[in-house]
Image 1 (tube, rainbow, N blue to C red):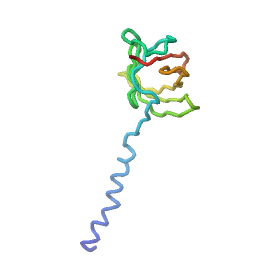
Image 2 (image 1 turned 30 degrees about the horizontal axis):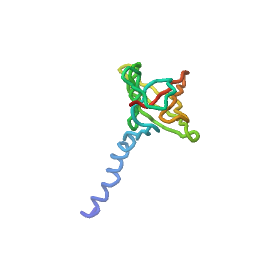
Image 3 (image 1 turned 90 degrees about the vertical axis):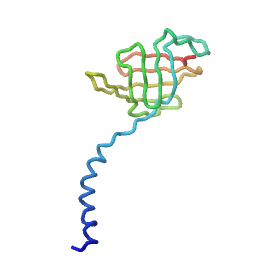
Image 4 (image 1 turned 60 degrees about the vertical axis):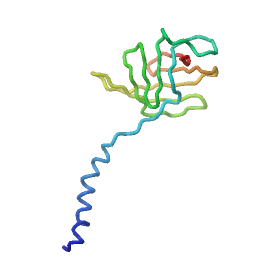
Length: 131
């Protein structure tokens, strides 16, 4: 084998070493369709609500932070549009003991600054934008 041929002979070996690492790369998460801090409220006011004493949901890109619940941090895995103002969201969460996935449907209401979360296991949470 010539000196020039040796580096080319190492190419298959290098590819074999890097290929398993490519599959181990983290998957990119999806972003939630709304952003910002929202408070749980059934108010019919058109104005944003004072969230000082409310349970809140803070949407930040691919993450959703919840106050006043058991799991404080969710990460969107997939966001699928289902109509003009509705999305099906699969998200995951991790606690010290549990790693799981959750499904919900997010619907932007006809009123401005209001969304509705329908949880897969039942229950609906109505949110209004915080001041």
